[in-house]
Amino acid sequence: MKYISRAENVQTGDVVLSSGMAGVFPKGLLLGFVTGTSGTEGGLFQKIDVASAVDFGKLEEVLIPIPDAGPQP
Image 1 (cartoon, rainbow, N blue to C red):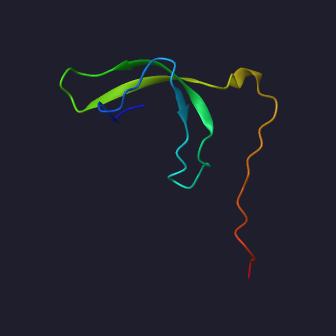
Image 2: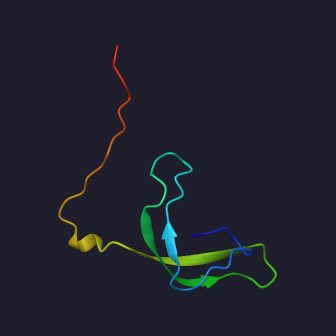
């Protein structure tokens, strides 16, 4: 992930969750875990490396919820 404020105290092993802000995914979904951080000294932002919480090679089924748009004309 890019452009994370340096004011955020991000540590290796921290959990990364969805924010729900874009309205696409619900808030609080587990996305992964922080595996490292980097950034220039004195810079405003840091970059964090995230390992996925899911082993995509082992998935057999995926459910994609689609919100109901209401009655169609």
